[in-house]
Image (cartoon, rainbow, N blue to C red):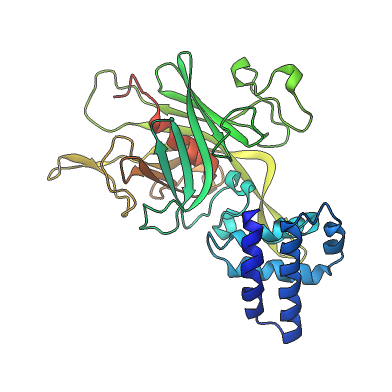
Length: 377
């Protein structure tokens, strides 16, 4: 509701600045403001959807397209979300116009959290830890050098102890962190030693995917299953830490095996080729941590985080690809860091990821650093 109220207050002034003709600009401002007002006061329930569905398709797409192009980052991108909240037809138009993170580098809707990030520039995020409640919060960074501002909230996770195992429940909401929640996204489960983790998605990652048969991965009891909600969890990745039983000197060593979202070319209405995320068989990617170098003067292991990590910690890591089926020959570029994670404060960490990883997968991998590892340290 607050997003649409913000849209109502801001759109009336900003849309008038569009380089349209005087009459076209006035119409766009009036329509956008009225649409936001309808959304605030429950327009879909009182006939508002029918009224806005009658808007000319060209004008509708022009309005949403201009809002999309004028807003680069949060919090101003909430205006794009406000457009999608007006009615079903506006929502469908917004989905067609707003590009995936792979192409735009922007996170707008919840669906973006399971789509691959951009190829060239990493998406920069912050993770805030609440030790008292064993919870972790993922935010989209407002600026590369600002570690104190939370930015846009994306995901939350809570750590639970399940007998000899540890689980992290990941949710779209910060309050209800349970598998039965409507905001449930997925989970992370460890073995007894805390050296092997399995990542589960709460929704089918591709067509024909089958949920895990393990009883511990079921979301609901049989009587609770709803036709609209998947009953199980779907395995989408594994993270393993190498044993260090003799406590030898050196950083953690890890390897990740992931089923990443597939990108397939599609032909749009203007005959141009675009890349879209489809529910097809995903690409298979193997990542390993980049080996640090020993710094004689500092007497510690070092990696270049380009200013995004400021505190030394055994949790800090950078991941590179060793196998990537989306690349020619299936080999990853070991010079390109696909995910980096590191400490910048007592309970603040940075997380930067790029294609082929999604925000959900990157967050899950980083959560493994907070688990107890009896055989690694």
